Image (tube, rainbow, N blue to C red; front, top):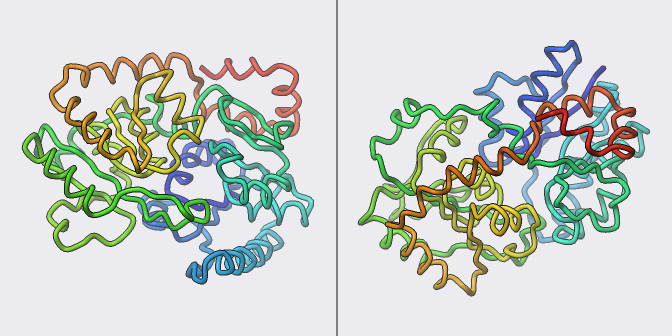
Length: 362
């Protein structure tokens, strides 16, 4: 079989890298198409993944610029699909849904966002996808009948202990400190980020001043850093970020993706975002597993107080055990993805009739 993946974000590269490798090992052909996003292209190059890159078009003129970019990307991917003739379309990008509907090729959205939190995207994408593959906790809203729910999270596809082994030697290549903190700043330039707020300069300064007496503070950022933060900038091979994250003392950011990653690695995380309370995956990680803390922008002072309390708290030592509790509850997501893709359409029938079948992948 021939499978075409459209990869639009670094987190999606990580999510699919092991399933692509396993499907290829089993004799299937993989076509990877990528968009330019943050360090995505560099990740693909460093990992040896062969890919086709769609043109990067600047997102100007607000919603009209986004529509223009979307149409052009749809046209470009339509051409690639026409030439490559894949059997299935896989990814987390609405282009696949629309192209798949026109070409009559099954398409699958792998998402862990609640549809109500990304309504515009859902209406122009979920409407056309064949199925939506999401964690059980996620609300697919109007498209619940299309949803295939699994007991896990997307990021367990690469952060499960079967696939990720933290390497202290990799961490030591970049950081000699035993105790250090990681701040992540998102660009907040995606369509669903319109109107959303995260960190500003005043908040960053306050957090750095709070943390520096306790350890080195590093900043990873999607957007250019101000000169005064250059000495804090984390400069690493992007493939190594999860090793740096695993050994960090604490994570603070406005990135939903890296907050989930921190939680799954057992690292205390503090998120300041307008998305707080709107994403079921992060709500479960916070309230069921107590692995993360979310604060809306107007509650920034509450976040600062909580960080202050946590810095020297013995509770910091509990997070790795909380992670083990979570891992014991969840399935091997990569193994499930491989089975689902390779056995489609029978896999859909099995999951609809017997959802507990997924627990074979523990």
